[in-house]
Length: 315
Image (cartoon, rainbow, N blue to C red):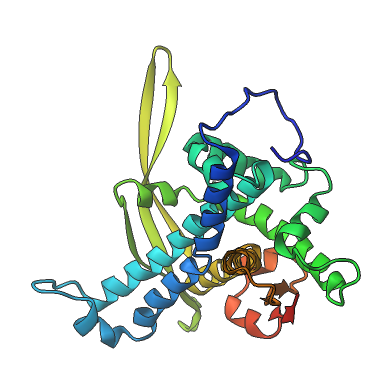
């Protein structure tokens, strides 16, 4: 257990039925093979058909499939939206694993139940990582930039980028907690995708003064109401709008953070396995946003203009 993590309540000691060296090997294997670019690869593949729907006929549709191209594109956009939350779960579990059991991360993740994870995420949405660990900034920076010390030329950049990452994690956790449509998607695909349009005309001139459309997700929402000795289940049809480009930007940053966590550590393990003392090239991402909220507010297409950079150095 990480000694710097704060004790919230006394818990029973967990004992793993394996030798310490086996746990260490399992941990290294997990880190070495972790596909940190998976989520970006997924939305890139989906995005190809959203950008070029003419490919759907020959590469996606099958006999006797008669689904409209427009419907397939809408569902691909919905899949991207849900990937925001799926990738967020991955990031939260990885960070919590590094926090609580850095030497047995996959074991900690394996025994973290859905309700426990939900509790962790709700706490992150309110407090971030600040109340989980002593010196949270130093800890987070060591996870993201393990070879950048105070004497490094990119030390100040790493501090700024770490502050952004901590704000991003808190905001991402809030996004996760607030979006109930994810449960409808995960359990039975109980949601439909579509588009909504808002149009406002000037009463006098008849001219359109506002015309906008957005992607939507429609789902059934359940509310449980206690009533004496029974519980009333109240259902309501809900609809939420989302921004496909915004979602892609969030997933891109989540992937960048996972890359910072794993890429250098994977190279370290590889060097150890081959018994080499060669230098390792580290290509971390640095975030230059003023506030994490900007990622969730504006079109992430604009974020490519120097707000996410990479710096290459060897060690």
